[in-house]
Image 1 (tube, rainbow, N blue to C red):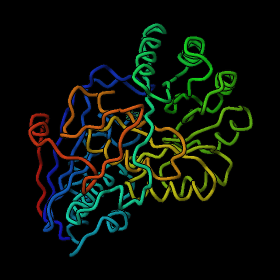
Image 2 (image 1 turned 135 degrees about the horizontal axis):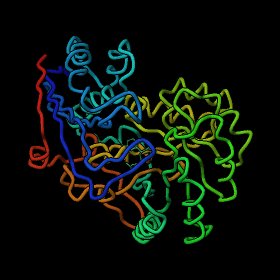
Image 3 (image 1 turned 90 degrees about the vertical axis):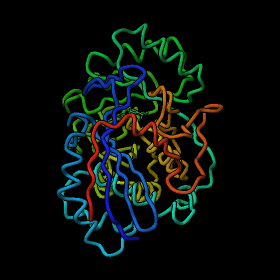
Image 4 (image 1 turned 180 degrees about the vertical axis):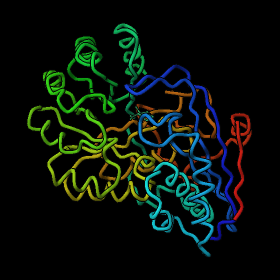
Length: 369
Ligand code: NPG
């Protein structure tokens, strides 16, 4: 394919309720969509940055300038472009995995759409649906948390993830266990809110038979996880720290991890996510597919990714209405019997609702080759 141009659209999608994590509260999903214009047709990708550099170093306001100045010219310089070329072409630019992932996804969408092939077929997945897990934010009170968890269980969610932080950890976990019983598949996510010296509150979670504790420590503290693993019985999962397949290989080698949360945006794209999955599978490390409050664009592709065989744990593969009243695709992921169907349409698995995208757009920048 020849990449002829990029359209970068900043869109703002209101959330049905605030989503609070240890790093901040979102009420609007503020993201950049990438439209790749090629001689073979167009494709769309979603950039999963947050409005502020608190989850990782990237933030939404820097995506359009970064792509325009530094990433797009490297892609335009290639006389012919395939999705597999994007990582090597953008490799010399340090960091910015979410911006790179959005470009790769848009180009992969254009390529697969032109070939009439679905992302699921490209990946070679054998499952046609994936189980739904849900990520439950931090609430002002335990009764409000319990009401939210009850509603998700009633809807059919098969696994609950509670966001935790110092001061909101043991009590919410105990309350959920006491109210809904020992059989509810339950895990917690700290989003790096603890210091490597905070062993005691993490040990105190052991009696609650959690599936895993996710990302207790800041991104760079890889070996602190190896120490923690010797002090707790709950399996330890990495998210923010698992920035690339190479880092995950080191974490496994250092006995610093039991489980990996794979997010295509965090690792620099779907193709890196597949490599990470393959490595973990080869090393016997279970993985699950994380979510970044994606619109229907990213949610469709995540559902196909999560159908790969190594994704043996239930992911944050929630239905669109977990976060949004309406989607920007005409075929949003809906939950049926606690599962999402793996999309089979050509491309990354969604049909864009062009009017909805237009209505949600607050800024458009076109970058020509
Ligand atoms: O279901 O899409 C979802 C959200 C899952 O909790 C979730 N994501 O830390 O894993 C996380 C968290 C997150 C969301 C992180 C948005 C960063 C941005």
